View 1 (cartoon, one colour):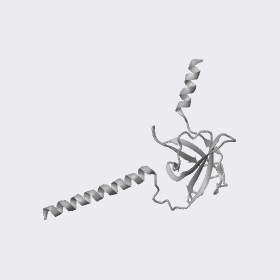
View 2 (cartoon, helix red, strand yellow):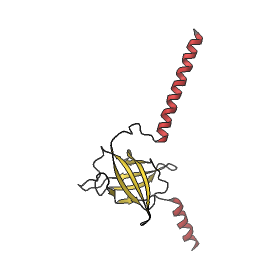
View 3 (cartoon, one colour):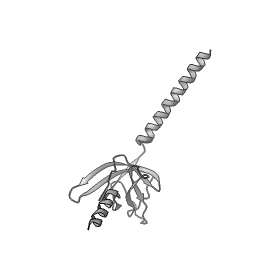
Length: 151
């Protein structure tokens, strides 16, 4: 009887460990359990995206409202075009809304931060956010500083 209790305890521990592992994999990989949620597409043009990747989060006021779905280069203008799938429930992004590339913490990944505008006209599926701020690249700043110190 005691061996049976130990076997059940070990089995329960293994199941709990497996569930915890699945939970961590889902959280770290950025897989959205509500992936079937309805979205619409917005685009933004940036001079510099420095490490922004596919499936990076799109947030507003610290809350995730979407994901980056595509990154392309416009070779004519030398800009990165970032496409984002935005949750359809977020329908109040005005035409003068802004988008910035930011970093999560000191060593974290890049993400797109949306800042609300003040206009009464709203962005719709396929629109482009025109007010953008590219990523801050520390290497560029250090290079500029070294160049200026050398002169």
